[in-house]
Image 1 (cartoon, rainbow, N blue to C red):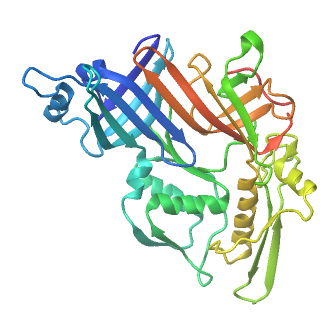
Image 2 (image 1 turned 180 degrees about the vertical axis):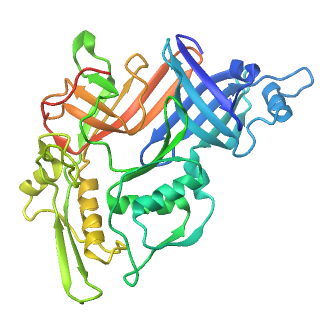
Length: 391
């Protein structure tokens, strides 16, 4: 690649650099990473006919067993003199050859998905007795040699109340567990080591150094284009979880609200910290009569601790109602899902920290590198504690 942008492809296990003829034919790399769905990649190569009426790269991949089904592919990008950053560890899922009518226009496209695809191949029925959801998540990630990054959960089913039972593939089961805890569940490589990390945790909304500082409409300092923010005001809601104690047969109910105050000094805030002064749920409750309310059903929780967690998770997930989108170049930063960016220049109401939920990387052989991002926020108005110095 040109323009100070270097792309590296590592193929197979152990991972080895792609052959030079393959890299010379590489025209475009696209990687879409997300905290909500599987990350994917797409590679486009120029192909040409040989003197024997075959096609060069098609012949090469047959001879060297390149891009066979589920072949591991790691994609790294290096900007200038910085360290190469891993964007995705994927597995080949399909190929497509486009034979163009014009000379030099024929291409081979190779696509693949991250390790969650491997976690979606086998349907299972399996009991996980007397285990919190976080322990289950760590155990399942470990089966795929994925480093677990798991936030602890306390509630669990214990006989005779019940047993947590998996019915379905590993990743679908984990995402159901994540949803009832208000967590995200995704796999993302560590940018430096390239080792896959399995995330089972709430969106990172605690103060932290931002991956990038985005300047909106700030003259010569502007570093983001096509920037926009949408605020889904009908999304935030409260919730009321109700149940029947299986031992005493006494009914119980738990309302769930998200407070707008920060945690005490040195303390943990079990309900999450709003990323701004005005929490989106409290804003919705204050402006609606009657306030929005969800009555959760089929949570899989029958005892108060589990039902409290599942009910609060509904409110926490609903609070991420502010979504920012835009595009940046590599001179700002190389973004990864799960990090944060700090926005300024969008006005006091929308300025502040945003959690990165989706990144689309597009790199071509002319040196063009564009990153389109989606980031979300669970509150409005700046706190005044935001860091506008990129580290």
